[in-house]
Image (cartoon, rainbow, N blue to C red; front, side, top):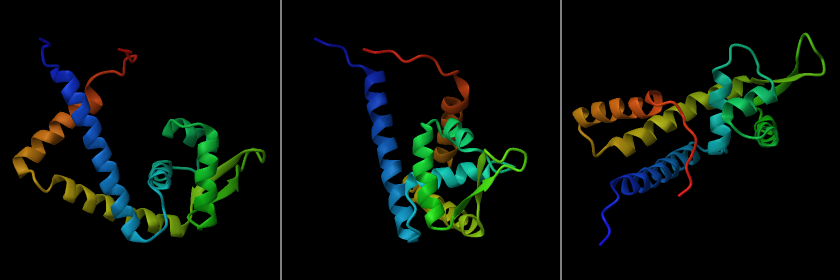
Amino acid sequence: MTTPDPDGLLAEQLLRFTRRVHRIQKRHIEQCGMGVTPAQSRLLRTLAHYSAPPRMADLAERLEVVPRAVTSLVDGLEASGKVRRVPDPTNRRVIRIELTDDGRKALRELRGARRSAAQEILAPLTEEQREVLGELLNMLVDGAAEGGGHCG
């Protein structure tokens, strides 16, 4: 007889919850009607954290993706007028990415979509349960240093 694997069950629940969060956020973003994908939304949010326009390599590192993925995201956002490529003032060979006014407007709308998605996701919880969940999530996000993965 095998013993139950509570960590395995918890891992599966976390994966299912993550997929649900992604699905709900995607639906709310699509309802905004801006034509922004979740990945583009993430890039816009990341751009907003920089005090000066970052290089593509900086974005790729922060987003933990390959530079080619950032190029594709920037191409789409640039075509829709939400970002623009600008030359670095000190090195003309370097291209930086900055938000446009349309990009900042999109970011505000996307924040609203994310808030409404969070409200939908958290609707079944009481205020006390939300506080506990917030504390637990903070512990999981901030608590343990990232270690190496294990196979098996």
